[in-house]
Every structure is written in structure tokens, then in C-alpha cells.
Image (tube, rainbow, N blue to C red; front, side, top):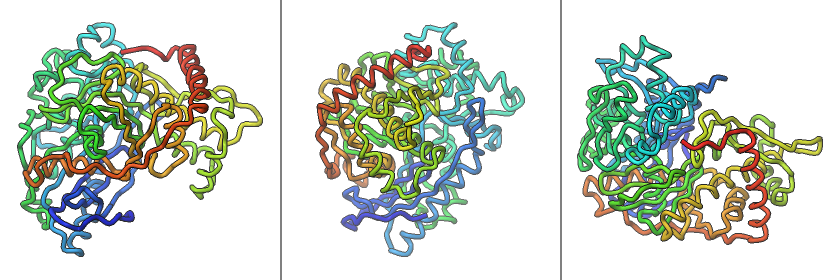
Length: 499
């Protein structure tokens, strides 16, 4: 499915950024200035179960990414556009088992699969969570592969025995496309099995998971460049011999792609999920308990927080409440409502929750519904609730990285809903620089690949154009009271528990 492309300079070198996100795969062609030339994407859905499962067959996920690349290659063939480097971005925290022949022994488990909550609770009782966080930048939480490994060992001993190697979604794509049985620092760093300072697998975490390091891919050097495996080079001859990088985490790529390449800018991204992150160069400082710390590479790390719910709240409300199919009509109705006028308190935990409080088994809750409550009011309350979670992340991030004074917002959920962008701006009470590049993760992956291959000198190309929103501080005050009400409901339901 092709998306409309914004005209770039059409000057090479041209780059291909591939982003396997939580709801679609995008393959996007960029010019030398990082401007979009063409956008191709393939939507997909996870198989969800009532016990918290969220998974998809490994072969299906690979083919989804391949189909998006097919379309980008066809565009480049028709337009005679040569690709100079290919970058790959995938969601963090995924997990899949591979046997000795490299065939999948399990489905791909999403970060949003919460079935490992019991295993995470056991980890919290038997190990020092604070020490674990200092080493790995992660938490004992069902979203991370460490807890999933503990759960899978008990739940599916047959698959456990058959599995030779446990890998991320990014590793799955690179071992298929590139024949690379290696993991990047970026993908490994978000596993909860990685030591952030040594940039190697963390032996204490491996012991907690009950696996040896031989059951994980070795971690590749940052500068390593790969080429397509023969099978895929014949499918995509235009990409044969073109330098590829191993996969980077989508959150790291989003910072790079939105122009937040240093500690002066915080990247706020809202796609299926939501997050706020800052890039730090060679930082070794202790990270606050509310936040996580992963890596782009051995020189750069990202510090921030992520919520499990963002644009998925909009999608769920649209489908479950049968809102109008005309998005502009819905947008106008949402925008017409006054802040917190609905009187609802919404805990937006449809896919569980992560930072800042890391509850193990959170589910969504809505309080205050009356006969006067409308579907659009529920949607507005859900969008405001997502913004409150981001405001909770902003506080520890501001304290830890005070120089990050500029907030740059990107992601399709923000780009497609000006009302949502205004809600976020007013809740934060700070100017919001809305990026003109909604697909920041694929753009970041393309720039990182160009940097690694020497196609471009670095990722610090001119930042994208920003539309600056100024907050209405009267609305901010209203939202502060509503946010306190959300926090109170969370406490009363026993969900505000740190990792």
C-alpha cells in the first residue's frame, strides 16, 4: 500500500529506511537531506488472547517486512533511483526462539505480551531490582525478554528444548535478510540481558533467565556492514551489494530521525505506543528509577520512558465505540470538547503499562461514565490520559537531563491528529515542536546506515521543519487536576508499583 510522498530534493545519495513497528512495516526512500521521496507500508495485526498474549508467526512477520521492501524496490526501479545504504529499525523487546537450523520454534512475542507478569513478580522477589536496573537499564517486567524467558521455560518446555538461540525481532529480520547471526548493541541493549556499561551480555541476568550466552547471538561491532543474502539479493537486485546495517531499536532511531541527536532536545513520539527520550553521548550517570536506559551504539545511549499505549487508544476507541469513519469529522468533534469536560478518569492500559511506575499486570479502567457520556467524550478522555502519562515521564527526564529544554514531537498519531497534538502540548505546559517527518524511526535508521557506510559524514543533517505549538496555561491548570485524579485512581487500584 503506497502512501503519498512529500517531494525531496531528489538529489542522491538516496537511502532506504525500513521500520518494522508495532502495527505496520514501512519502507521509505529518502534523499541526501533526509527528505521523503517515497513511502510504502504494509499493515498487520497481532494475535491477542484474553490472558494477555500478543504474538505473530515469525514467517508472517518477515514476509510483512519483505512486502513493504518489495514495493519500495519497485518504486526505485521505475524511477531509476539507486539506493546507497539501507537502515533497519524494529520494535524493541520482541522475542522469538530459533532452532539449530534457524527455524522458528515459537511465535514472535510482542513487548505488549503480559503473560510473563508472574515470572516478573518472582524475579522481583528473588533479585535486587535496583542493582539490576543499574546494570541493565531495564526492569523486572513482562515487557522484557528476561521475564518472557522465565515464563516460557515453564509454559512450553518442548519449545525451550528445541530452541538453540533466542533473538529479538530485529535479529530475526537480519538473520533472514542478511544471514547475520549477530545482534546489534541497540537491539541487545533493550533485552534486559545486557550490561549497559560493558556493552556485553550481563552474566547475572543470563543466570536469572536460565540460559547461557551461547543461546544468544554474539554482539557485533558498531561499524560492521552487511549485504543481502543471495535469496533476497535475487528478489531485490537493486539492493544487491548495497550496504546494510544490523537492526537498531525503533526508539533510538526515532530520536535520530526527528533531529534529537543530542541532550538538548527530547524526542516525544506517539505511534502505536508513546515515549519520551533523550540521546546522551558517552553518559555513565545513574538513571532515575522511573526511566530506562538503552543504546544506539557504543558511543550513544538513549534515556527515557515509554508507555504501552499511545495511538492504539485512538484505534481502539474508533473500533470499539463505532465512531464515524470520516476521521476529520471525529477530529472536529474531539477538538470541540473542552479540557476534562467529560468528567472521566481513564487509565489507558489496554496493552498493559510500562514506565514510569512499571505495574506488572495493569489493565484499562474508566471511571465516571454516566448516561450523558458520549463515544467522542470517551475518545477525548483516552487521548488526554495518554498525555498525562507523558507528563509523568517529563518530570524525571527534566530533572535528570535539565538541558533538554526543547520537545520535538513526531509519529503518525500526532501527525494525523492536530487535536491530539494540542492536548499533549497543553498537558505538558511547554512549547511542542511538531516534526514534519511523521516516520522518524525509518528516517533515523536510514541516517544511521548512511553514517555507518560512510555515505554521509554523520546523522546531524539539518533538522526537519517544525510547527511550534504554544501551550494554553489555563488548560494546563485544568489538566493538572485531572492528572492528579488519574494518579489517585491508579493508586486506589493498586497499580502504582515500581519495578
